[in-house]
Length: 199
Image (cartoon, rainbow, N blue to C red):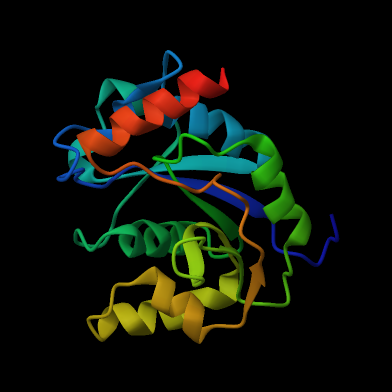
């Protein structure tokens, strides 16, 4: 790695309320393993240091308690709270931000993102296969992205995707179905069937 490049840390977002799923998405098991732990292994292998993003009420949760944590220092505003909290904890680092609910994500997809990283940009992100826009929850946020994200937060705008759209973001091609996520019990059932058929 070029010594001038900010170090790359990993942030696994696990602080969501999972309201549509009606249970903690991070604890859902696919192929016999909670998806939080599976995502953690992939993220840890791709970054120099990794942390799990949690709300204060989740710190002692058995699934999360054994992992290095960054507790949200912003009110519950979604993923932006986790990203901003991490950036403030380690402002010297770039952050590979990853949602914990991507059952099809593989190490190769994450490595492709790391390999394509441009530290001179504000961010490097995949294109979403659903709308063609930047995918903020499997993306590398450079230190320079912090100012705009904070400015938008202070203005009451909490959407990290829109922050990427307003930033100098290197946009990578859609990585197939690797970033398909699961938000409802019905989607989980479909995903379980997909994984079984791929086994």
